[in-house]
Image (cartoon, rainbow, N blue to C red; front, side):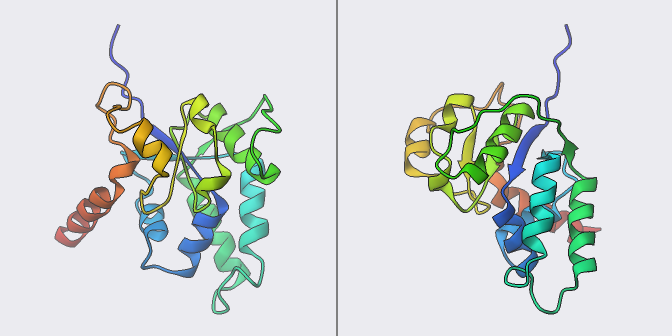
Length: 178
């Protein structure tokens, strides 16, 4: 049997896209600008796509100089580079915030390794599914750092998303050279 190169899948919470839309200087925008990436693939479901549309079109979230058409283009471009995942099994209620359950269900269905979010406290006990919550700046909760300190992901060939600062740096250097 031949070894399979499994690409690392991740799920971005809506707050990560909102941060990327507001600032081109942040880690969220840097992660999104890396798509498509040979290192990781974003997983999206229809409910999450609809939440992206709903939240990012709100006047209090969207910067004033950005039109609804720009937001729609931003979301569609992100979707172009994403793995579209259907969900056939519900894990509700699992998390404190019922709106976050669909993100966990997507991560389980798509076999994602990480949920990228600014609300680490909302994603408790997800390590039971082999999923870890991290921020776009690659910070983990203390409990996750302690429990996974010496653990390697898979067979070691898959680059962990928690090394994203290094990825972003390498991506920038490669773009400047070309």
